[in-house]
Amino acid sequence: MARPKSRTQSCDRSDALNRLAQAESFLLAAELIIDDGSDDATPSVAASLAVLAGIAASDAACCARLGARARGQSHPEAVELLGTVEPGGGDMAKDLQRLLNRKDDSQYGLAFVSAGEASRMVGWAKRLLGRARRAVEA
Image (tube, rainbow, N blue to C red; front, side):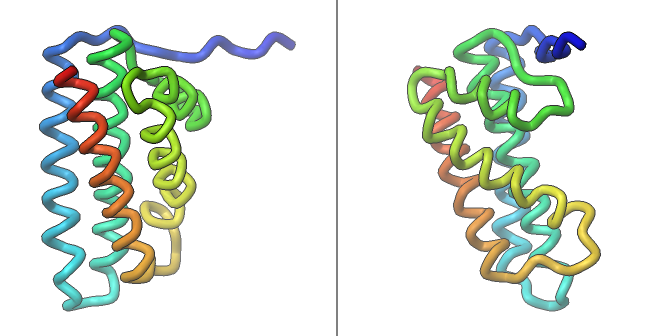
């Protein structure tokens, strides 16, 4: 059976700026929540927001530099597409992969994400967002 073609959606600089703004908002919310510590669920919420920030930042970089973003259910295809972005696609792809590896636990898991793990995830999202911002502004 033939492998299905990867799914992408055309997008432009305006879309890139919109996704960049969304990524910044997701990250801001994650950073505010990560330090709350008022209940055991807050690190998981921050981790989930970090994943969303990473995905939005990836979309922004891909829209700005490639004119397309990943739209399929295959995370490896999204990471591969991001890896083709210049400048910095390889590094962004590594951070996106780290976030996506933890997406299931942070968004659908039965156990809470630890504060330390959530903090690492927020850091990866922040670094990815910074690189995506540079890709959009290049």
